[in-house]
Image 1: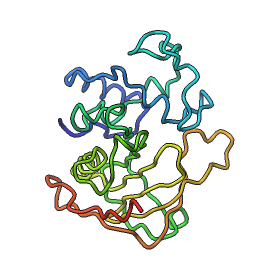
Image 2: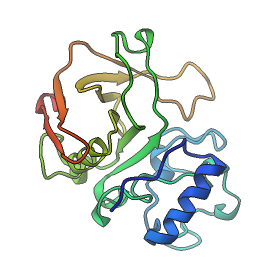
Image 3: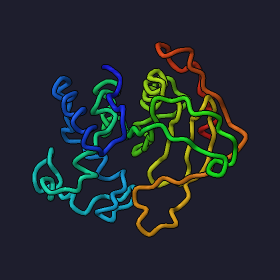
Length: 227
């Protein structure tokens, strides 16, 4: 499959126009997958990440489980996960792989946010991986696991800012500028921060990852990141 088509941020009308043209060529569709309806936070619905949407009742069938599908918020109707727009094989569909990948414009961190100097951002885009089923996603240190396939795909496509979170856990792994750091998610101090991801990382790094060039896979992601 070709690289994801996200060149601008998700949930914008222009991005939706680009994605729809792309989907006409690939033929990919959500099918019976509704991982995003559980994993992601939606401010308009007052839904926190990991909380199953109250409208997800299956009343309209397996492939349209949302009871307000035709009137759902724009945050829902304009959302396209990375698999839908080209990430990996059919087996990496979120419900099959146990993980959901969302792509964002490159994010410039600063010293106050991370607690260390992140250096210049050198990434085509940023990505958040929500692990919804660790048994399906597999271990980061296993070269054949679903999560490793996803990381290889993203880094081949010059994504150099990958945040890995596991549903139900406050732990986070951050792959950024060649280093792997552990951290924890910090609860938003805003009552309406349903769609925010705030976190702090721990220095020094627990590992490194190396990308030879845009056509070769990650050479190493040290397994200490799973400890």
